[in-house]
Length: 328
Ligand code: SAH
Image 1: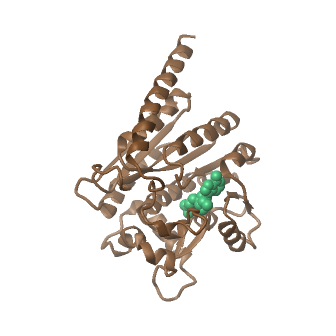
Image 2: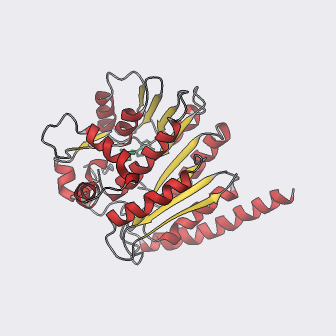
Image 3: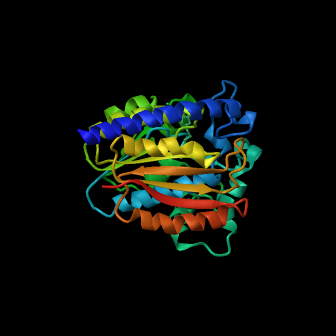
């Protein structure tokens, strides 16, 4: 009972803090700059297109962690399911106009290619990049694999992928990419709405990646929390990985505190700042929260994050941090 009251008090404090954070955030940030500073990154209908950002530092961070998570699931031979609530197009050609316009991959994946020595922690991710480019004989990195393609290259014959995407063009691209792959289900649906119905998967093992474009800015966190709360209630043993952009680290604190206030266990946070945290108008870093983090995943992240920081930092004041938000 007392514990109940404490959790309720924590939730209430969080809500008050939230109100203040939302108000200051709304004042500080012009609309639609959470992840992207170019008007061109949206199509005529103002839809977010990931092609402009493919292979940027945030993708490298997110996908290197994704590879680590899928590897831990493969340690057991029983099948599992990978669910991507915001799948994107699945595969991006870095020679296309969108990627060239922003050139974001230059300070992302291209830095890895240029590194004189690639750290062991990044080797599995790097090998996947090579596999995704195997068909191109010129030795360049032309194709950047999105999360669905990375997962499909790693999953085994009896594992399964469920991909949700709202945009028509991206859905078409996913359907084309996976036309011959019977493990993959493509759903043109709102991933937040679809998620509770997709869990628990029949395999009872697996990973959900939640990777929204954050067009709703801070309000996106509320949407994530509500989808996560219903999914977690139905499937408390699933692994959930949630990516988020960081401008100022303190803006993320209410989201981090939400997990303890809602009794969600074994939650890790990995945060990487590649720039100084002195501008609320710039994407200075990004992070990933992992619910039901696999055994010793904190140790693996503690190797990966410093390596990523060394390779991707744009400023000597870059920082990284791995922390437990909740335990067992
Ligand atoms: N996870 C991908 C990148 C996704 S970019 C990767 O790592 O490669 C985010 C995508 O979410 C965009 O393609 C956008 O169209 C899509 N999207 C936006 N809102 C959505 C929603 N509510 N449900 C599903 N997809 C959504």
